[in-house]
Amino acid sequence: MVGLGRFGQRRLASLRADPRFHVVAGCDPQGTLDLPPTATPFALGADIAVIAVPPGLAPALVVEALTTGHHVLCEKPPALDGAGLAGVPELVHSRVLRYGFNHRLHPAVREARRRLPSLGPLREVSGVYERPSLAPTGGWRARPEAGGGILRDQGIHLVDLCYLLAGPLSLESAGVRREPSGAETHVEALLRGAGGVPVHFVSSAEAPAHRFRLELRGDRGTLRLEGLATSSGAYAPERLVSSTGEALEWDHDDSLDRERDLFADALGGAPGLHGTLKDATVVLSLVDAMLQGPP
Image (tube, rainbow, N blue to C red; front, side, top):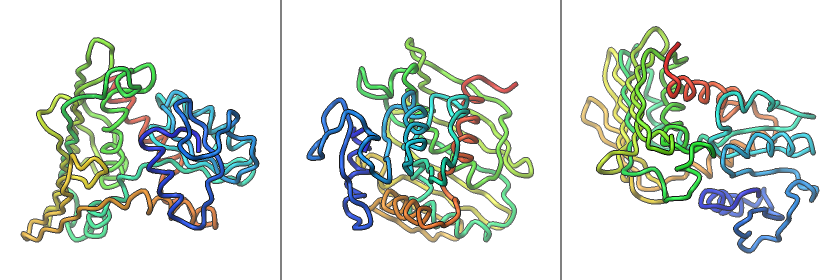
């Protein structure tokens, strides 16, 4: 384990709950919990490196882990920007590389994907992911030079879901507000999905309360995702509501365990259908475009 902050600790708990994985050491400047510490994270002969560090550090660690023979599961954001992934090979000596876009595996998202064909051709997608502030003062999430900012840290998940559900995306327009540090606090954008479907997007750290909402409108109906079951509970409950009036609700997030299982499947030779380098590159390119404005 390289990085044992809040999310790294959640990854650690998920891995320890699965007998297929045995965690042998941890590397983190703030301490390593009850793991044997190591100052050189890739010198122990382990098979897998799980990397959960700020995005400015991640690409070099991923390359080092792959070139020393490790399979890699790396937390998002995968880099400061799309250019940061240019030197990251997807496979080195037949190693597996996956990035942690776990929102794809939330129960409401999985069910929405299953039902998506029932909507007929998509006509509009609208997504909002909001919170009241960026992060505690001094944390990397509030420092743009470390990869902070609401879009790069949290909104990237919503970008990924729009890409997943609406097909290839292109940016039509975008507006960005920033705090004095330069970190973005509010981003609104209009994108176009497959077939020109409009995708309305909001990622904000200026909202009065936590809110997640993703609406998919098709010729034959609508699906609306409301809330997320997260470890903090700030966005709960997680619901999926259809235009027929049916509503499903979840209060538990098992997305990290499902992502762990998909990683194990990839180690066994299953094709890469989630969290690939291609996914990470596409999503970061869209984030770059929103922050820089359309060409």
